Image (cartoon, rainbow, N blue to C red; front, side, top):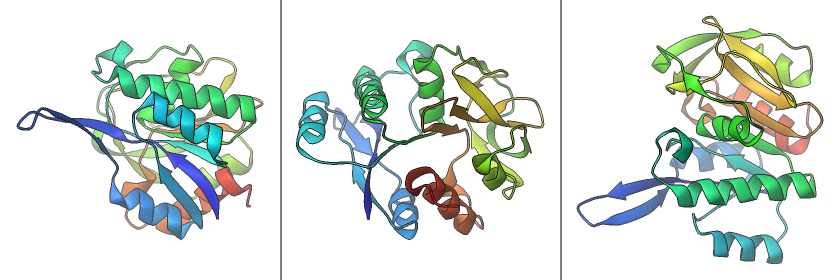
Length: 210
């Protein structure tokens, strides 16, 4: 199995004054179903540097949760870890998938500013495919997806390009023009009834499978 780094959200538990890393268990189930081995990433840059220096990894999955600090978020540690991981992935030509916040981070990394997008929290959106490639063809099978975000974009700036939009013109899926970097604004791990299609999509990203 290919080993895929998977980042975690940060939850602050006030009753214990603790900052906890957290990952939806559905991610592990989905990755294993796709024959990918998920390796959870702690939000600790020293540990991440040690991991990358001493082990081999085949992909990077940037998960959802938490806003970016530049847009009101409160976890600078997570932002630093994930920006470091993106730079590492680019340097070593490792495939990247950003989900929700993960896609926002990719857009921010490549200087595409985010803005408020109304009516994108806890609703279904129809996908409209605006590119013709093997990734876009995977999206065409999904139809509608559930969204949980209040920030996004209506346009893509190079080197990113738009793959899919919602019916209200919000960018829903992106890819880099020349690197294996992709992003989606929905949560594959939460899409009931679409598991097989998301398994297929994950394998396309990280295995190069058709």
